[in-house]
Length: 265
Length: 234
Image 1 (cartoon, rainbow over the protein chains, first blue to last red):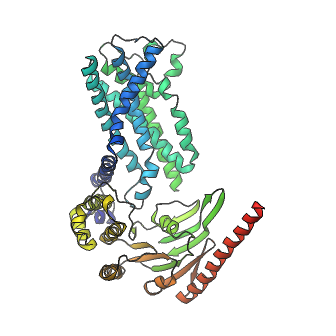
Image 2 (cartoon, one colour):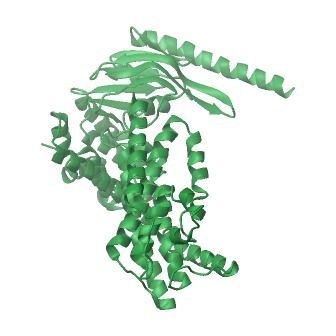
Image 3 (tube, rainbow over the protein chains, first blue to last red):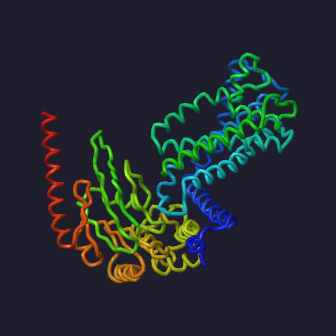
């Protein structure tokens, strides 16, 4: 009996449900990869070149404003420690928030839901962000002779939290966009200051006590601090908490699910 | 059950609403074959997209059965994948055995070695063949057709019609068309979309008659729009 037939005959068990949904996500990932590789290689290569351009621009900003690195490491490695988790967040947001348009043609399949598209896009970008970091780190090692990874697990966890925040944020606005297309613009506007307030240019440890309570509201700052803690030998994030971004991820996801259920009536 | 409950769908073109459905109602039992006549340019594809779940109404409810399938739907294909990979991919979506589905589609579409080529290298005709093969490979409770119930010419066209007739022994069909001849033989119930409303008719001849009036109405509306436009310009 095919899985479709099995699904049609009574409610499936948890294992079967997971396999069926895993199949759909795997199929979407395959489509995504095929679409990327089939496109022009310039566009695909840009995914890996863009972080190097961002890195160079941020390095230039550090040099131009005479910013010194607040941690005992070189400027490039410091920038990488904050920029890479931020880029992972943005890549996931950009990709997952396209779920509305990408999935429109596939929603005719009763088994395919918008959520599958968000999960598939998140997984692709989550893996992709580590590939991008790998490329950037190799370049840093070859060109500048520096390559730091203090605690790989903590760094991995920080990067994953950044991706998780991106996925939850995108999912929430994908759900809100179904209510009103105007929310798409709001999602973009809210993201604009994120680059400057999420610890790409500074560390939470060096923030003055009077501004720290405001910045610490930003869950992405926590995720980036955790990733930085895991990457740099001489940095220990004092104010970052895993629980805080996890709570945000759970809250945004729950809100998105509630909106989707309400919209479906 | 398929259909619409107080369903409205419109598009804004340069600030002017183009109404496809206005508080429309329709009820079709799963397994019925229904022909819906829609004047050209009045939203056939939108109606099918609404029924298929690929579009949402501005207000109202669309009744959908879980196992409906648009005939000849090419929107699920990825150009960068081969015909075979696309079929495997779709099989994963619907939970069918990819190899069984692939074998059926390869045989039905008669694409030969092209089945293993990338779909973006296909001609529109080849894509349509593959799309029809996929449609018939998926067990559907109701097929949704936008004007086309067969493609190609000669033997392939006959094969499409024969296969559809076979499938309709156990499945339904909602055929949206602008050509009354198309719905005459294959559909049991008939309806007309007139200025956004769906009117179900007692027979095909009544539907054809109402459709003629509906087409004249839509032409008259266009003429009136032109008049208004010319006054605006003046």
